View: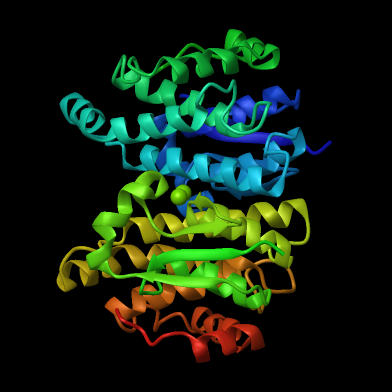
Length: 194
Length: 194
Ligand SMILES: [Mg+2]
Ligand SMILES: [Mg+2]
């Protein structure tokens, strides 16, 4: 088993999908949490100057979703056919596009306005894709379900109730959080700092 | 062999990586090119209202990179080990992040300014990643090389010479374009409309 060190800030954000995937697979990992004060000194040593990165046996890999896919493959969470794999990857990228556009650094008001204006398209699309199924794709969980949950938690921390009109999507979050290995991780992870 | 129909605008942009991948694998595909005038009527019928999409045996799949990865897997272009697959996916997402931030709809001046300010980080990173190797990852082409070429062509059409100080990256583009199946595609594709 390789050794894994996740390097990210002390928050959920773009790191949490990786923590979920490590936890789901019972893979031990070092969960290094960088203080913002220490980031300027660390940044030049990190490929492309962005976190999260993961060290695998001492070699640094960047881009959270590239690492996520590697972990999801090991865990059997990428979809059960080549066509399901397209669906899973497409959901990941659709949620990620939205995550990238969210005005993280802007005012509370700007965040709320962005959500009011932009989230209905995403949420309606995701709820329609889910339909009455327990999981987005196929008959078992994939990392697209996990990613929805972790991203929604990030949005929720800034715009509480943003998905309140989408009960099926909220129920999906509960299903993800009820997976025993994920539930155990959530119980033991540091309390939110954002 | 499934039937494939690519639906995109009459330009290279986000569709060209898929045309490269179809061509590389000698997969027949219908190359449907939507005129901008027809897009408003078509848009509501397209998942998430974004092109490109690909119909596979009549079922629509969206998100260009999700479809690209499916085609790249079939073609053996995703990297030769699980760690190389992370590297390939990370390059794809790094280039894609930049592509998404490029001010496509803004003025020529804004495009130039964006490139002057933002491209050195990307280009230096890509050139360092390439080093003196013929391909970004491993000892043979991957779809990350293809994606660099198609994205760079899109940038080039708006900001000519944007990568002129990066001769290794320009040579990589030539290597991609010299692959016989890609060369044949480039010879037969419609002339640029952007
Ligand atoms: Mg993306
Ligand atoms: Mg991305």
